[in-house]
Length: 308
Image 1 (cartoon, rainbow, N blue to C red):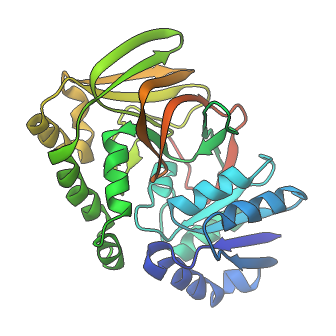
Image 2: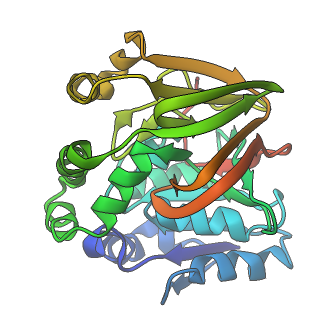
């Protein structure tokens, strides 16, 4: 049984249009399937949680954006249910990072054939007094979180999404944040090794390299068990940050002296003051966060012979 979860608002209505086209295809008509449209924030997570109660013989196919796959992954309480993802959002970094390519109908065909299945180890983060949660793409503290917050609150996000130029929103927001951003003081503990950074711009952790609709923010990141790829930017001038981000689409920013690339099995971020962080593009405040990889991988369908 294939269960479609569609976010009709993703990509300024693109996900809904994709599903309408898929329904007309011969592949879809031959499938045993049910479909559900999300109606509010968190609905996809509730659906995935309900489906997890009886996982036998089920495959979830998500049509939406990175926010939708984030919800589904957090709702799943088992790794027994494989996931197919047909990108219909504005950034679609999960599809990019997972090697999901082709038209929606081509991806659907790959999902149903299930020739290749990707083991995908999601990240987990936890704060004192709160239940641990998962991230599909990335979690970031500082500058990238401020950029994500500015994009989410902007008047131009929907405009650029509607014409397929969602990444432009991040570029504009980056320039806006650059003017007012103040570096933070934080403590970073990676595999027990502690360092305090007083002029830190950002700390980003990713399951794959991409963020913000194709920015190769963590170029050394690969989909793998246990290991967290980490990128830290600190002690850098504002003008050099601008030059750095011009190269970020090509992953060349890692060559800057102020950019530190690490790998660790456990990471802890601590700040005396509340700091902004982003998880798969959604933002919140914290003082402390611990990050690890989920032990068991989820199974991703619809890929073409994925290689890291």
